[in-house]
Length: 251
Ligand SMILES: Nc1nc2c(c(=O)[nH]1)N[C@H]1C(S)=C(S)[C@@H](COP(=O)(O)O)O[C@H]1N2
Ligand SMILES: [Mo]
Image 1 (cartoon, protein in one colour):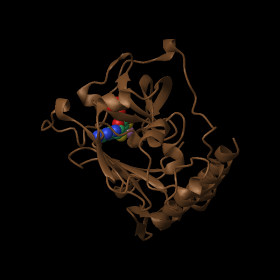
Image 2 (cartoon, protein in one colour):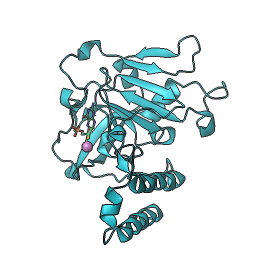
Image 3 (cartoon, rainbow, N blue to C red):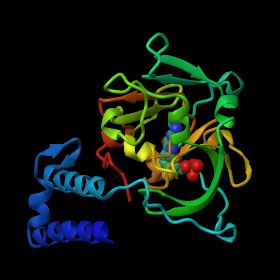
Image 4 (cartoon, rainbow, N blue to C red):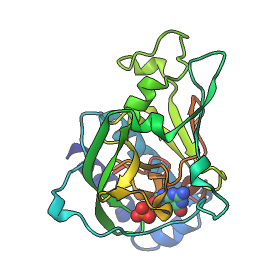
């Protein structure tokens, strides 16, 4: 609530300032990463406010089975035909293992992690939303099983987030679509590496063999057909952020 009212306040401040002639002023400002700078600043302060209040205990709303909607399809960047699902492995980079910082993880290894189901909303920045049933492994369980190199060089301890790499980056196997996530979003209990949607194996157009479901973020971050997963301290590149959308993309 606090986050929402603070956010509404920021937008209201912009709206008030952009009344008569204000919009023309706004639109003629220098752009910063594809967006006029005053709006970019607002997104950045929203991000700071959201990150301050973000907690892995704050859950996105969940729904009942009766509220699940038929699959809705959007976005096929990085889902080209030149792909053999049977040969797929997830390339994981930035691992703690000094000798093998990059490893190939199989779907069987991901399915061996505790299976979690959730019914949550996928909200697209285009303005629509749908309710899906997801099944997969928590990304936090994956991170425990395939731990990143820590900053101290010591053993992974999730209660010391300051010792973890700050981000997780993911991209499609062809690297045409890619997203960056703050580590706290990656560790959120509703952030799942999914192999099923609405009770059936994931379909190719929805990202088979493995996609992300992250209901604390907009649809853009729910990357389909994950090919690589990278633990890093550098903010990973993000396809839609490069087009001028909010990098944080939380709601
Ligand atoms: N690889 C890939 N993942 C993607 C996209 C994309 O174009 N390519 N589009 C995103 C967007 S904008 C949305 S809204 C969701 C839609 O997921 P769905 O098609 O399973 O409903 O996928 C996201 N993941
Ligand atoms: Mo979207």
